[in-house]
Image 1: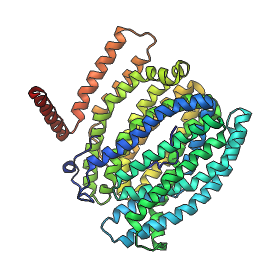
Image 2: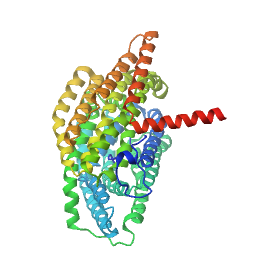
Image 3: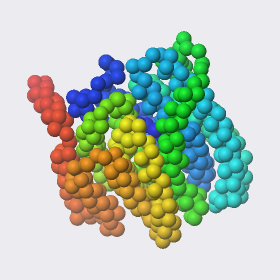
Image 4: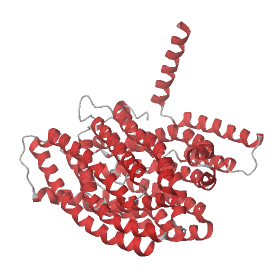
Amino acid sequence: MADPLKPGLQVVAAPTEAEAGLKPARAEGSVARHSTLNFIGSAVPIIIGFVTVPLYLRLIGPERFGVLSIAWLLLGYFGLFDLGLGAATSFRIAALRDASRAERARTFWTALVVNLGLGVIGAAALWVAGDVFFGRVFKVDRVLRLEMLQGVPFLAAAVPIATLTGVLYGSLQARQRFLSTNLVSILSTILFQVAPIVVASIYGPYLPSLLATAILARCIPVLVMMVMCYGELVRGQRPRIDLVEVKALLGYGAWVTLAAISGPILAFSDRFAIGAILGAVAVATYTIPFQLASRIIILPSALTTALFPRFVPASQADRVRVGQITTMTIASLLTLPVVVAIVILRPFLDIWIGVAMAEKAAPVGRILLVGFWLNAFAYVPQMQLQSSGRPRVVALILVLQIAPYLAALYVGLSWFGLTGCAVVFCLRNAVDWALLGWGAGSAFKGWPLLLLDLGLLGAAVLLTGAPVVGAAQYAGLAVVALIVLAVSWQTLPVDSRHLLLSRLRRLREATLHA
């Protein structure tokens, strides 16, 4: 089960600092180390999710799980009701890295107080929207409808927690406190996912109880981050709200807000549309492989998060150059694991959630894996635009996609069901990446190799989904894997190739001497 209260902006062999050519904000800082910390911080919750999702399905059933998934999506959307101040705070504090402590404290306190007020407004809006959606729109059993309506106030109370979390995360990441943020993220995920399971096993699958437990569990990490921010940013500084700082934050955050409103429409509308057209069980069938497939973006997320504080003061030429290196690195490290995931998805789901649901979820999941592979590359131009102070371009690109995407979703779901929905998701991610790259002004030169990778992934999907399993299928998949391996080596940056070969030589020498 995804955590909707964790900030969506998670801005792994990374480019070396020699490749990046960027002056570190701290002498001890390391892009590779920070990327690794971010990767681990994202990977641990995935492992926890592997364990907890089957428990949720067993304890509360697929229909309740589908309803709960929609509830978290709704909260995730309204949790972005912070007018972009979480991202703006990260940008402003990163830009103020060499300023006085008083200046950074002023930015922090201003963002924190304003975001708390916006969270209260967002809570009221979610209360109204939740009553309407669960009371009139969502297709669900009458008993579950009543439970969700009773749980809406708990969802509303979580919105201020989510908006505060965005400012706290952004502040710590801007100061490159990646170890701290990832430790808190792991704690948060454990509490968020495990506490409701304990309650469900003792008191039963009553949805309001599960919602209240998960939300209360998130208060602990918020308090921990507040203590960290106090020590890092505001110790010895009086709380102060600066109207000039509000203007600066909102100037950046206004466009981030538009993106924050538009982005979740694109990100969440597939499951809302499935719930409205096909019902709660279909939501669960789609959400489980969707959550699995989405985990592959922890690589670009970890890498771009580590680079963001350094990109803020960098030149446009540096951003473009390192963006090229980063994109090719992502392709090299991600494509072969995605091929492997496509191949093993069905047997894994058979064991994890049972053969009956796996039979319906696996074909959708294979397509979604390709969609998230495409989505991984969009992180790079988005980070380039936001770090250069141009969130307006990101927002406008997202807004332009909404109407065509919703229309395509309706057609895909109506004509082809969940498979059509997954294909539309892939197409939208490809368009998003292309538009963001164009907006960032980076003339990417690696298209031929990435298009070859995309074709190989498509071949893996077709071969794995073939109705007849046999030697020809296995041989075809082996050929696909070998070609992907060769292309991945070709797309790996030269410095990384030399480093890898050097380490392999040392490993061989150590083995021979042993």
